[in-house]
Length: 419
Image (cartoon, rainbow, N blue to C red; front, side):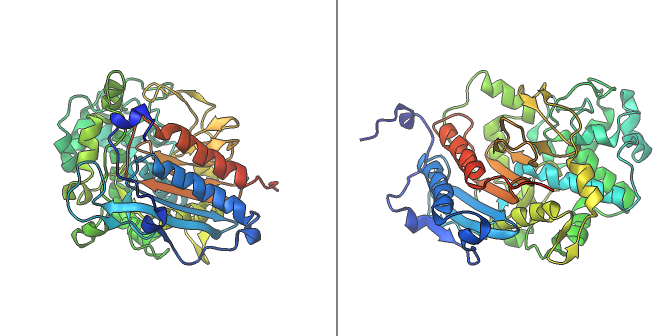
């Protein structure tokens, strides 16, 4: 008998009684004792992941955690497609090497490409955007800097009243941004740029290098690190590999419905629906359509945790990583997200209390994607974590379980004294 009253109105999935039937474990997980955890500790983290899946709001979850550079967990649970709300057809079990859309977790990676340009001497983030893109300076935006774009202080946080189909027209989006009037020109207003800032950053890469940001990513990160996916969108022939996204959880009503529309410029349902459209992956959407596996994300953040080097290949200089994760301002109310946020020039940062990445994560840096994807590195715990999901509940019975998973990772991966 189901005693949970929310279960009657939540959009959810069928959770099998035997979770092993939908669980896959990749090769290469290390003995947790060698990484400063017990087998029970690793089991507790995976148990919290299973408890999150049991809420019925996540058709698929992939999880990869590295500690001291070694794989502690690399697993999946659920289905790639076929077991989401409204699905018909055969169910396909998810695997750890299944690519998923990172949504806004893409922002952290896009930011690192901008910092790489600065490392190469081709850009200064303190310069106005209009120094590189003269058209951007229209309507009072002449002195808005690259760093203000990266840290959500550029005054162009949202698109108002656009057709979501315009996301498929890169040139039209740029015209809108060039003609936009900023809400502030001094960088004093913190307001999350969900989509807008990414297009500006992508165009910066194009203007400065002559390459699209996708090509720049391929040359400097994807190929050097041997990633199969890890780029904006994906080729048509790989679309069948991708996890399907779903709206799950409680129905979205006022005032959350209006809040989401303000953040995304469209309804939540529309945003998720677009993310299943093949055209979404034929575009470059720098703020929101990188496709990657959880392992690839964990490896990328491990590269940052290592000071810019991974597997003997240097991707960034250590000073570039330090500059990218340095706090821009103390926690401050974000006028779009309506919660206190702490940012670097491109990253969401953790907190001493409860933060974006769990409790006592003041040194952690990374990004959240569409409320249910988490990618971060934590120097104090020598960990990198990637939690990718295909369910997108905003409100529902998952919230305590999601908090418990973040809490369990923080508690079981104990802090290590930093030099």
